[in-house]
Length: 232
Image (tube, rainbow, N blue to C red):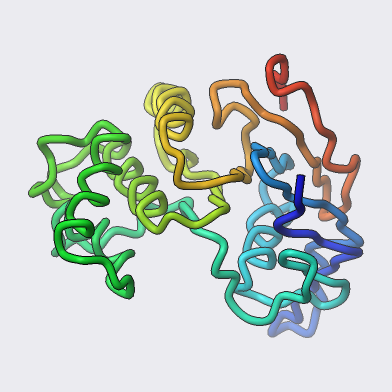
């Protein structure tokens, strides 16, 4: 199994306007390989989102190395698609248009372009809502648009940055279980890395890494994919 992303002794600090140095991550080591579903666990403020953004090339680490396919990552990681905590939808665009925007740089023929958008809409269960605007959708439906948009990019790695944290408990649990089924039906990504809750895949988590106050309290531990129900 090849390694897609690797962090080696990665630390991250921010210098606040007050002059205080805020250390968010300290000496984090982990790997993301093919065909893995990994949960990054920890309380709010422990650096989970920062860790994802470093692996995605959105921000740089203060120290340590970030490798993509064994080579130092420079700039944006084009292997990664991300589902954010917030819905991040354009309110003036329809469901179809919000998803299609993620593919505007592709060279697909019009028919193939439309087919891919329709495919991911069907995967997340939003068929019939293609022309709906975000204001006409529930919170769970909006987050499904975000998942569909990420899947439409067909990147090898999918990052889920606490995508259900803004929903009520019932909606979050329903969508969390449903998203596992959605992702298992999709063959458009090789590995999935989620933060905040180990049940993004309906309990099928292959490994987890725990962050306390930015410190790693256990390496990425792999489990039997047929038995791996990991609790937070």
